[in-house]
Every structure is written in C-alpha cells, then in structure tokens.
Length: 330
Image 1 (cartoon, one colour):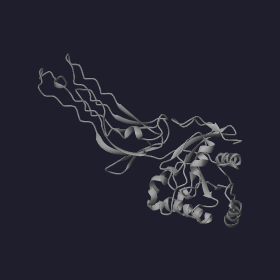
Image 2 (tube, one colour):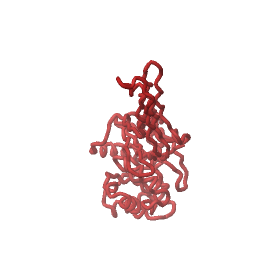
Image 3 (cartoon, helix red, strand yellow):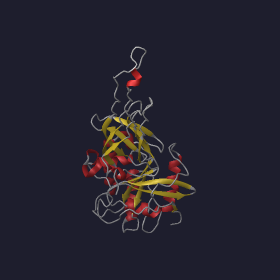
Image 4 (cartoon, helix red, strand yellow):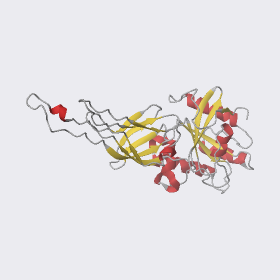
C-alpha cells in the first residue's frame, strides 16, 4: 500500500520533578519510501519525566520518541497550516513536540529560614499538536504524460520495478519508483500517474499527482504516437504542458525530454514525422514492447542529467525496491 499523506497527533512527555519530558522527533530515513507505516497509528506520545525519588534525587528525564518518515516528507501544522519542516534528505530531522520542563520538589524551596518547605512546583505538560505529513517523491527523472502514454511499461523495461500495466486509463494509482543503471550511472525514475486536462485544478487527482513531479530533476514527457482514442498527439503534448504551467510556472521551466512511444504501432512513423515538423524539437522515439530506441533514450537521459547540478551519480538503490538492472542492449 502506498500512502503519501497522513495526519497524526503528537505530544511531548510531561515534566516530572527535575526530569524533563521527552520530545517527539521526525527523522527522514532511507528505510521508508512512503508513509504507509504511519497510517495505522494516530496518536504518538513521548515518555514523561519521572518524579523525584528519595534522598533529594531528581527524576530521570523522559526519552525522546523518534518517528521515521520517508525522505521528501513535508511537515505541516494541521490547524495553523504553516510548514514546520521539509525533510528532504536522509538524516534530516525536526522536533514537532517539545517535552515539558521538569518541576521542582519541596527540597528546591529549602532555605536557612525554611528547613521543611511544604510547597513544590509541578512539572509542565509537553507540547501537543496535530501535524500533517505529505510526501513528495524524490527522483532524478519523472515520467509524465496522459494516461496510457506508456510510462509504466517503460519503467518496467528499464528497471526491476513492477508497476501494474493495462490498456485502460489510470492503471497507475500512485507513483512507482525504479532504479536504472546505464553507462555506469545510476539514477532513480518515478512513474507519475497519468495527468489529464484540468489536473492543475485538481481534476483526476491532479494535485495529488503533480506534487510528485516537483522533486524531479528531469521530466521525460511521453506522448503516444497513435493514441488509442484517436486524439491528436501534438495536442496531447500541449495539454500536459499547459497543466504544468498552470500548476507551477517553475515546474513548467524544468528541463524536459519529449519522447514518442509505441513506435511498433501502424502509422507511428508518419505520426512522429508530423510531431517533429510541428514542434521543431528533438523527439526520440521508442517502443517499450520491442525495445526499439530504449538504449539511445537512456544515453540521452544521462546526458541531460549531467547538465543539471542536482544529479547524484552512483545513487543508492531505492529502499524496498529490487536492485538496479542495466537496460542497455534490451
């Protein structure tokens, strides 16, 4: 199960006699790729500080509670709506609820004129709040396009990811990640669920899908050469470009590689020639079914990524995914 948004309640531990309550800490770790492990528990409480023991001893402080999340998680205060932290990289962490300050027992109030004080100060309660966690997938390459453009098929061909594939729209319900190795380079590819016209205003879960594109370095825009619904491939390309610009002008400026897919279909060559003539730009052509053009596409992706400072070569494979596999010569 893939979960990319959860809301949880966090409470820092209460303070005891001198013992501070534990804090609730969120920590981004590579062991998680989404937030599914947090969807079964709504309340998270750190340990309270202990009360003071005999012989004027102070109580022990409460232990912090660390909650692991996937890298790329945004943390917001649910009620106020503001961003608390962006845990983009493994090791990033934030305290979301501080523990309460420890109180003082009667010994603290002892003086030369009051040898047996009866007053004391209780420990303070810990902070508490509802927080919303929202994951934005982190990948070097984001595969975008209309439903049935061939994104999942391509991902399954170039990596060991196993997305669901079928000849009907919206087969992909959530982003799939795969690690690709080509020319001694390793990069992560995200198959973003198919976008549609109106995605920028939320149609077809557009906002849920579009935010996963925001962390990618390079957009690989797939356009079906001969769409099954007999739509115009050039217009299909422009539809998605328009939705990207409406959602985020900065996202629309992201480096993009346009690729024509399903070149094994009758009429594909003529369609690609028209796309080249109308858009006047580089348009690699592939067939994920036969393997046509895939090695060349991977080399081109590596060249484009090399131009971007965000590229991390020799990346560690995505956790919970199969190891990287070379797709060259497929």
